[in-house]
Image (cartoon, rainbow over all chains, first blue to last red):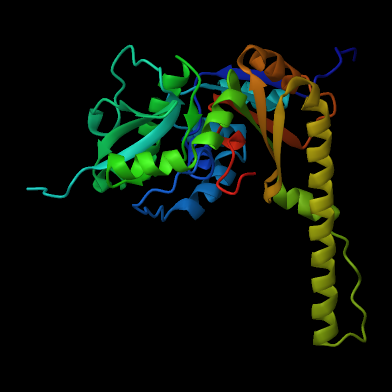
Amino acid sequence: MASEPRRTSQAMRERDVSLLELLDRILDKGVVIAGDVVISVADIDLIYLGVKVILTSVDTLEKHKARYALGMTTVVAPDADVQRARE
Amino acid sequence: MNTRPARVYLYAIVDSDFVLRAPVAGFAETPVTLLPVQTLAAVVSPIALEQLKDTAAAALVHERVVETLMAERRVLPVRFGAIFSSTATLTAALEDRHATLRADLERLDGLVEIGVRVLWDGAARRAAVTTVTPADAHDGPGAQYMRARMAEMTTDRQLKADATALSAAWAEYLAPHVVGLREQVLVTAEMPVNLACLVAQAGVQRLVDAIAQYPNQAADTRVVCTGPWPPYHFVTDAQGA
């Protein structure tokens, strides 16, 4: 059967961004100015676990991502997954 | 009655002539203010430590403030959780690092960060690269253990090598589109590549398009791209790197 050359990836743009993606950045990166109050973020280990889980599949990402319009999220995935995520 | 003194929370560093054209809500909806320190200004608001108990909610407040300011002018994002007992201690801390912060603010002017994560099925990948050696009938329990351990280490090395090669390929492909790049390899079993790309605001769409058109994407990988973020990964760290 003749078919168009299959693209292995396709872009899907959204306005949502994962809260865990945000936490991954702001808890570990950015300017460090040593304050004189020390706070302990006890759940920091859970955050990476969460990132792993949330990004395991596009479906999972869709279900779990926090819907805060902080920026643009683009998911590039095999065609079937993009289709499923749009449903 | 809560008699604990309010402390000062630091969100970001901006130029000293930055003007807040409209109120920007910080913790407990209290508007942030600017604290001038030489040629810079600290974006601050009062905070009670109890307001940080819900880390996720507090993180969103922090990020909203930084991104609201970033939409106006250049901003240096501060790591979450910088709290000071008074404006005097904050001022002293900023004066100590003024030269570095000033240089970072200039260097990162007009630049944003795009996150690129390449993902694969960790279990499937592991199974694919694992070589099963037939057990030797003469092996005792110790030899069997050592044989299994050696196979496990070989698999770990192969996965690391595959992830490193994948990261290098992505880095080379993206290099013409970015100003800077930070790489992490095999952050988790599911995430072989984690890239932070520094790019001019005007170049974001070109970068996203390039990512979507990556020609060598393996069928068992997918890519998640997020941003634009303030350039968290590209500020000079406390050690000067």
